Image (cartoon, rainbow, N blue to C red; front, top):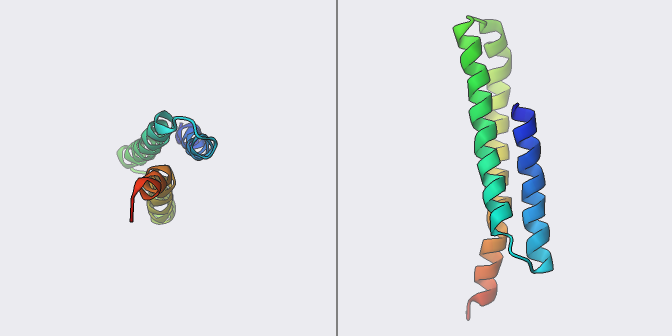
Length: 96
């Protein structure tokens, strides 16, 4: 499920950037991108929870160290990319 949520988050993020570039309202796409980023993290956490309940410590030892870094990096990238249109709009509307 996390793959589906992640894919939707990526598509919505690029749709957000595209809609900003062509001058359309991008805020719904931004909200969808950030929401599905959150759902991706929750879905990954659910998988890890199932492994803990099943006492599958080998899977946890293999996956958690790598996924921890990947989730942090990808979440930060998602936030930055989804917030870029708002920051550019603020800069454009600023008089300074």
